[in-house]
Length: 160
Image 1 (cartoon, rainbow, N blue to C red):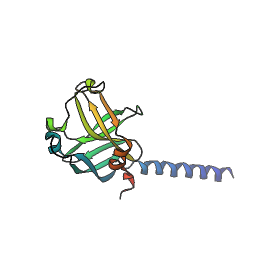
Image 2 (cartoon, rainbow, N blue to C red):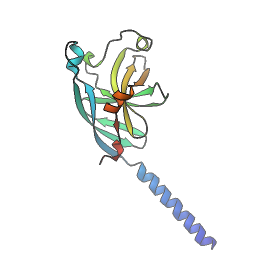
Image 3 (cartoon, helix red, strand yellow):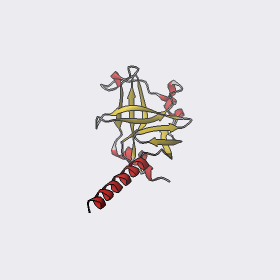
Image 4 (cartoon, one colour):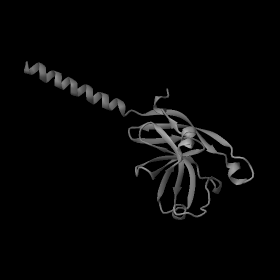
C-alpha cells in the first residue's frame, strides 16, 4: 500500500513538473496597435488620424519581446498600480514621435511624452501615455475609460 501511494505521489509530481515546463514555452502572437498618425502631430490644423501597426509579440515565461518595423518595447512603471512592466510605443527614429513638454507637474520631470500600450501582466495591453526622460525614469499613465475601451488590446493570449 505504501509503495502504491509513493508511486502515485511521484507520478503526480512528474506530471505537475511537465505541465509547468509546457506553460513556459515560447509563444508568438500577431497583434495590431493603433497610434495617432505622424502627420497629424506635425500639422495642428489637420484632423487626428489613426494608423494601425502590426507587431509580433514573443513571450517566453515572463519575458516579452517584439518584432516590428515601426514599434519597439521598453520598461515603465504604471502610475496607478506602481507595477513595472513593458510598454509598446513607436520607434524613436525622429523627434516627430515625441511631444515636447508643455508644462504641468508630470511633464516637467520628463523629456519625452508618447502614446503607448502597457502590458498589465495578465491578458491586456492598456492604452495610455508614456513619460520618459534621459535619466532613465519612465512612467506610464493609463488613458481614460472611454479611450481604453476603444484602444486596449485584450484577450491576445487566446489569439491563435
